[in-house]
Length: 103
Image (cartoon, rainbow, N blue to C red; front, side):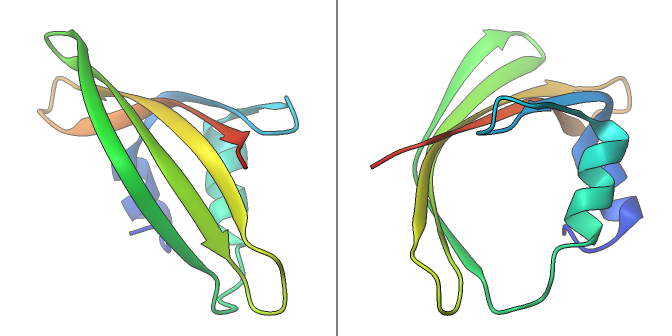
């Protein structure tokens, strides 16, 4: 679902923001560009410990753990949170995301 611009536009809200683990703030266009440039190098991601908490009628907070494993590189673990909003067209889109390194 992350390999075409149209699928990413369906997933991310136009006002999307992300705070990267570096502390840098990314916007919609920057994230779409970065995701489309990710190499198909056999990297896998394992997601666990999902929790969903309603913040408002059409807004949810999702938290989970992530482990990214790339060939010939150590695994990277992180705690992740994202805020999702059901837009006027009825589609849930991510409006905010943050990942924090974890042990």
